[in-house]
Image (cartoon, rainbow, N blue to C red):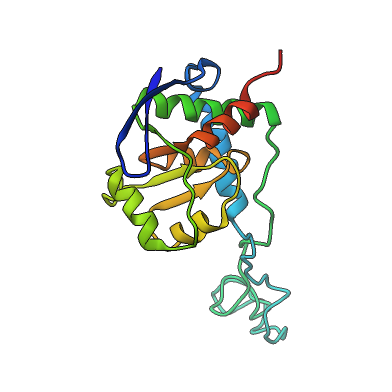
Amino acid sequence: MELSVYNIKGEDTGRKVTLSDAIFGLEPNEHVMYLDVKQYLANQRQGTHKSKQRHEVQGTTKKLKKQKGTGGARAGSMKSPVFIGGGRVFGPQPRDYGFKLNKKTKRVARLSALSTLAQEGKVALVETITLDAPRTKDFLSILTGLKLNNGKKTLLVTGEANKNVLLSARNIQKVTVATPVALNTHDLLNTDTLLLSEDGLKSLEQLYTPAE
């Protein structure tokens, strides 16, 4: 698959780059992508929910009424879950929702997500973006030139962390900046356009192309 390279003004430079089939030409594995996204979302959960059981609520433990002869069920404590203000049965307790996922599985999931974006025509290539100073207006002009300032989600992948680019983009809604090592399947599948800078594509290929 070939992509045209655009400059930061949105103009076609006339150059084309062939995407690696080892990264963008795989048959996507939907189940593996599901597992990776599930783990990512599970790790976002704090797991601090807590309800009080009967031994934790305040209240008297005095027997409410005599055992027999009232015509009702036996009752021994106001802390019983059957009474208002009593403890909760099998309520939520603090827990860790995370689970283990093999590194190879996560790698396949990310490559599947990249291949899915390529097959759907959601990958664009731009020259390396450099900004002299953090300025949101300058970054917006780049998005406008690339016709990406349309309210849809854009994920920009740069070769290395660029403070000026990051600060310029962080106040723009639906725009995310990341490096190849920080990419995750959730963000890849949750974007409308994967915008790769040339140095970002090079770093991505170095990261995911198997050594010969």
